[in-house]
Image 1 (cartoon, rainbow, N blue to C red):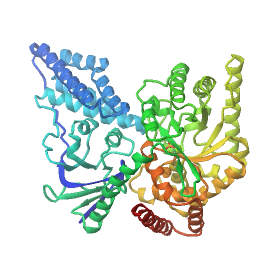
Image 2: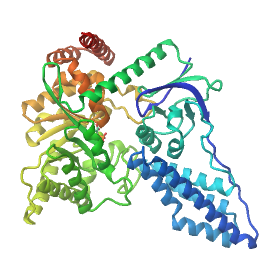
Image 3: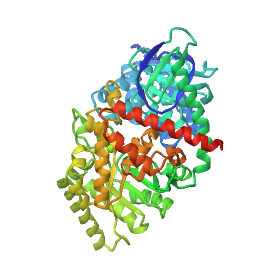
Length: 585
Ligand code: PEP
Ligand code: MG
């Protein structure tokens, strides 16, 4: 058995015969045409663009029924690239004046654009690079008289292995033929990963070793929970896979039953379940999963495909639509967390060596008051219209900084009051705890804010100094590290002491293994991806609050992440057996 490690981007497992696709990159050589061929060369360029356009439209149409809007927008963006007037002008001028072939003229222009992007550290621009390559490959293949390579040979359900897959590749694939995917390239946040998640395909990207199978059809298991690809998996791995599929079938059945119920431990302790949203279009889905409000609305994603950040009215309309949809439940709007690994970022003036620790979130907003003011005005206006809104601030690092933010927000509110716009009730302002310094200062910050929301994705990354995007260290991103639980426990105790609500909105909130520990250390509000809510509602009744607190006490006395995880798993097995016995009766 051979194991290749990578980054898990979508969850789940997939087992089946390997289907390996090599990257197909057409080669383009410099070629010149006769002056009399200029017209026909431009015509074939137009034709190639047209056929590429038709392809993309067909892909987009095909995806309409089962893809989220933001995924379809990737193809819209690729279509826009095909319509780039400047690019078209440059290529046709080169054909006319230099008598280069359309293929060479186009290739040269694309290369120029890619060279600019290659120098950038910006995640958003790097994603554009992938889109440009995908579009240009399609056009060049038509110019060369080749049909664009599809994965049409994939006729039996298989595990797809590749150096790189484009979003279009994934959408074109018959979904029932793809059991899982694993690629050498890619990152957690790129567009291919987004499509994989959206289509529910178990996926591992950024594989650290060759993914070429030993032979055609070799059995491969993709573990998209832990980021591993097993070639000819052994009995233990197969048993894991079987147990997983059985659990999935059973939990889907049970989830349907609990969706409309409240989440309560077996002794009736209520846990409030909120959803994390990135797009308005997901609101309906979140409701259908049983979300009792929005715990985190990542506003920066709302405008992923816009050319510039939206004005006050566009934002107000978007926030109001969301708040109305969930009224009377609370909707937590987070101000822009731009920078770091986040998409859409045209404000950076120069490349930063370490963007995750650089100019992002409230740091950027405080330095760009006009941007900050527009967003806060839109949020306060929404609160004036709908009411059920609270505002949250990411990456706050000190009391001092928080006081600056409060003063800024107060000025915006006063300005609106002078214009006659006043929210009916006070709009709660909350701090996202995701920098360890703030966690250590929580008792000093708590008296000055209305709520805490813990962003464990960043908090753990900074606490353990592990970049969660980097496959070389991803295994060290240990959510069960004792320091994590000491910190979470202290935060919950502090929040309760100051009588302010505290929730978790990082991915840890949807990790079922962590659920009793979160309840045990004192969290009674969780905000997760919508799809995780039914399962949490389902399993939370397997233990009582008292049992969760006893488990937390034991865990807080342990010294290693391994010990903690093993105790948690052992405890879950015990509870699981008990609830199975209950179900049998
Ligand atoms: C977090 O850091 O845990 C969080 C919820 O914020 P984001 O994932 O958007 O950085
Ligand atoms: Mg964060």
